[in-house]
Image (cartoon, rainbow, N blue to C red):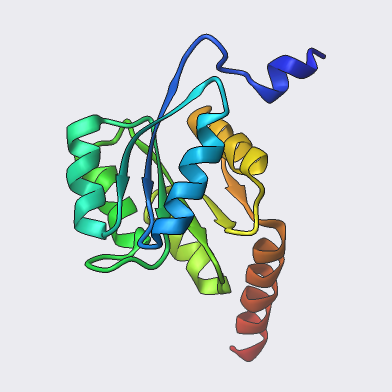
Length: 157
């Protein structure tokens, strides 16, 4: 298997990315790191939920990277709205602290991925590529926690 193709499957096609997070340092760091990737282009940055929707409609990104918690509308609400308004834009949620119920809600709202902000820049780029290719990605620790919580619900019934 071609390792370079696996790392950069869309080498001939730029993936247009919207980055939405209320933390300006996180946005700047992600933009700087993702700009080093030859196939990713940050087309817009948003600090709030409403701004993310407005910029997505204006710039039509391929993938929207959404913070779970933002002023004016969390990433779940933005993902759901973008699924209605811009169905070609795939969404993913990034968070500093995920809880089991959030993973299920994110996926139900149309998000293709739910990952922690502890990812490296290369890992985030890889997840963006996976989401763009139509795949799902849930942080393994969060998936395990979600499965445990779901199992606990069944035992309580």
